[in-house]
Image (tube, rainbow, N blue to C red; front, top):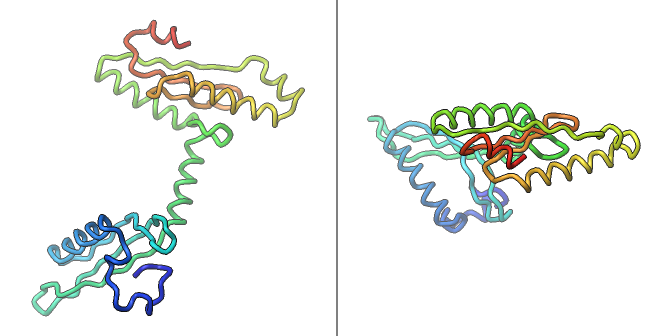
Amino acid sequence: MQWGLSFKDLQGTDASQLFPPAQMKHFLTKDQEVFESGCQIDFEETMWNSILQQNRVVHTFKKPICDASGKPLYFIGMFVDITERYKAEQRILEMATCDILTGLPNRALQQDCIEQALEHANRNRECVAVLFIDLDNFKVINDSLGHDVGDKLLQAVAARFVYVVRSEDTVARQGGDEFIVLLCNLGNAFDAGAVA
């Protein structure tokens, strides 16, 4: 049942000795679902691994074994640890939506944020603003001091932008030395000027 333990280690124990109470409650709820539906269920969940002392993402299967009348008698359960796959998927998603150098949202994610902010503003009769920021003479820094220094400058500028805007605003890197700042929940257009 619990990876990191041998069958011998598991003999004479029950799951409550291996999992925290909240996890056990979740297990029992899913077990009841199998018995009530009489159907196999499979789902992804986070499970505590007491040996590794960390949460793991698992894909769980529970299949009822029924008598001749179709009444569930017991079930067989199995889980497959998919933590590494899950982490890889999250990393791919991050790479597709975030700028690798600064960690800021990239142009694609920012476009989605702008569309959502406009819809929200239209529904709530609020204003939003989009600021386009281009760093002057950045090419000179890259050419004279090198790309490593230029990268550090971009990271510092990104951190400064994030620091000075409100938590509901979004800073993104457009590419190169260009940034976009999305200001949400503005009372009027003059509020954007104050931030700029």
